[in-house]
Image (cartoon, rainbow, N blue to C red; front, side):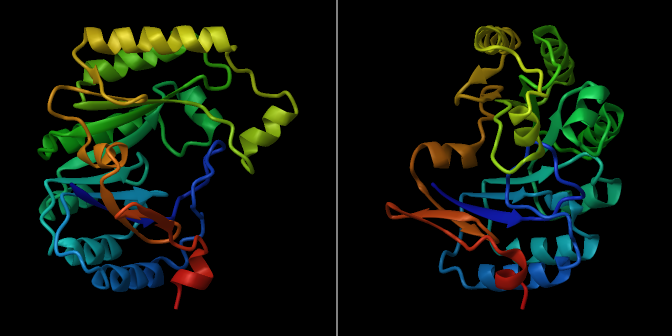
Length: 277
């Protein structure tokens, strides 16, 4: 298996926990996509088994830039074709465009069904906005959807998370990713943590939550195939499995990583000076 990862570094705003290579200034979106397409043109590979467009927030792209990128990728015929999508940046027009260009898997960053918690994370959407996007994607025929959830969030009890988990399970996505909050350097949450202003679970509570989460997901048919990833049978993320199996993958875009023939390397992270001509 060989995968292609494409990094879109733009976001509407920076979540308080995020240390990904992303920026909130979309001024250079047009130029970035033009340079990204040149990088794709330079690839020697004629095809990939999987394509994963991540970020950042890929669905923040304008319709024009999204179509320009997807048109360039049409020459590949991946088995699995994923795009990350954040509620608040999706609409019917974009979903129809993704469908038209063969995207067959959407990974939606929900994180919580509790609007107060979403606000405390710096998320740009409400649970209701997410539901609208999710139901619209379903109505357009997307039948392989992942939903991201986070646990051990500030002021989130074990029961708070389990309520979110059950709401997500009731939606019957094919895949659920559950990540524990990690306090990353140079984030707002690191600053608050150092000041003792983040109310988090202790280690024993977090361990209990994790094992309860696994049992709950198994009860409803979700099989754990990675530390944080659960799927219905046959819906494991093939792109993730490439990473886990040490298979080859190519990354394009600012800060993207590649692993070819046992050699791992990454692109420069600097978006303006490296990726803008």
